[in-house]
Length: 225
Image (cartoon, rainbow, N blue to C red; front, side, top):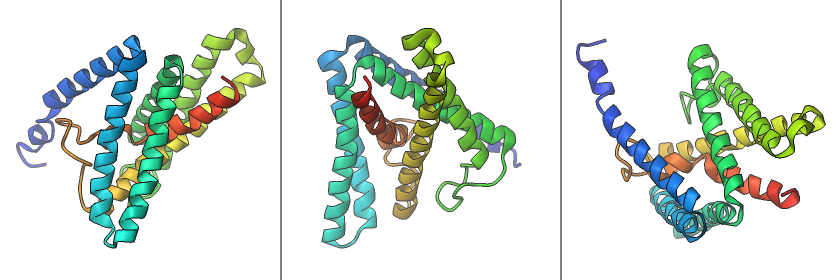
């Protein structure tokens, strides 16, 4: 390692930390206030996410028909996720956020600790099978905790296994959303979806895993609120 390489690598840590705290404060305040405030935040985030998605696909697709197809698909995908967040109770939205955070955290630490074979190195070189399993375990336990807060000791029956399975399944969806965005960025030849968030890239970079999880959770909540 050359002298000065590590400082360069970590030079943006203060900026990343401040940006993360601002995002956490804004999201937390919006969820606490609820109602129109949270709805407005969800719509703004969705609009910015679609703008970044459009920038990526317009750089990828060359024909007008392909571009229209991509934009319609992206509008449906992102729009449905935003609708899910707006329609579901805040308590369920918190569960969605917790599952995605648990997935990312579990995948990060297990991936770094265990390493091993990559899932799709040409799309996302850092993603390993060990990381995916770690994310599934973390999300499954998080789901179990949320079920316990609602159902109490009933989770010590088959319901507990269902809760873990749901969390693990949502973790797979979160990773799928991450892979989709990574594939789009690689095709477009960019590192981040935009530079809107200092030190963190774009909005799409931050919510890529949450989009499919929100959509799937809306279906689960509709079946059994």
